[in-house]
Length: 375
Ligand SMILES: Nc1ncnc2c1ncn2[C@@H]1O[C@H](COP(=O)(O)OP(=O)(O)O)[C@@H](O)[C@H]1O
Ligand SMILES: [Mg+2]
Image 1 (cartoon, rainbow, N blue to C red):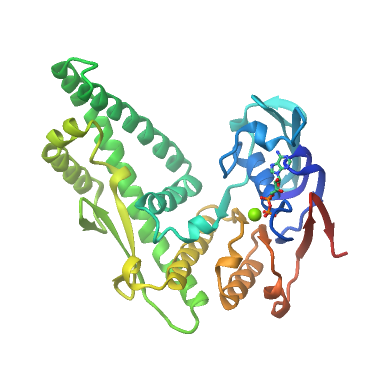
Image 2: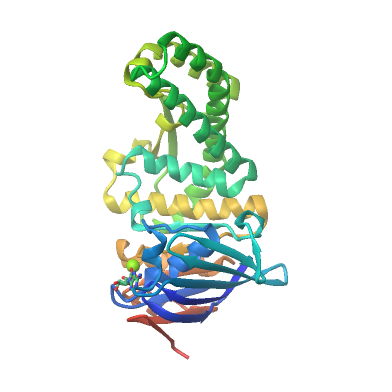
């Protein structure tokens, strides 16, 4: 699935945009503050129905305007169709070939976003690393998305009961009974999600290793991972064993949960450690090595997606290149150029292009809300 064209009116700092994309690499070059990220945001908004930055709808609409329009032309197996969003400060309306639809009825390409935040997820909080894992589940398996959402709902319900008990909004005994009635489903979903994360890690590991060697030609590091539940490392374990362990922790932590008013067990508390030559990369790796691992992990996610579905997701790389040294920029871009993925990159500097022989790429210059191309 490819995005052929983007047309916008009154979106962010662009009065009007009309860009025809390359099937492969699309590079947006320009100084900061000119609108490069806004273009990626428009693509993301059309596909995901939301922004990747904090954005109320009114901030997406150009200043002093009441409405914005975004449209993209998509191609899926030789079939062309148009997806449009009409945006006001409070509403968004989806139109498929100019007919109103709900977003869930539109066939959309999977998107993978690389941002400086994602590149830094080794040194960030465990939340970032969990997101990295869950994104694989959501994007690679239709069941993954359902599971992640169902677990979130079950967690919310359970946390609400625990909070109500703590704040004495419900009778304690009644509350504990309600808690006991939701525990079995919570544990089942928690075990399933944990198991799926472990399976994804196992499947993706050889690809991460391969990508890491491509990025780090100078030193062939060995990649491994360790999935942590309650300070214990898990790998190659059955769903039943995970469920057993979670149930044991549920009993051990029941008092602490009532006291804190929140769930202390479950995948929302787990972590994944990336091991570099057997050592915890959080403490033993330079920032450059940490970024290489995440880069390799993301590249592996793309290859894994291709292995499962037979096609690549669309990639958005926002401001990522400036975080990498020149050799890594070249290695990343040439790898992306070799695989049949459609990629959108923003950058202030195009030095990396000099050494590369790029085919099927298109450079767009972005300057104060206007776009121009080389040819
Ligand atoms: N709703 C809006 N109306 C007009 N301009 C906007 C709006 N939202 C953001 N901008 C402008 O967009 C520019 C930032 O664009 P951005 O894509 O983040 O730049 P960069 O090229 O650095 O990625 C800023 O100049 C900002 O003032
Ligand atoms: Mg930007």
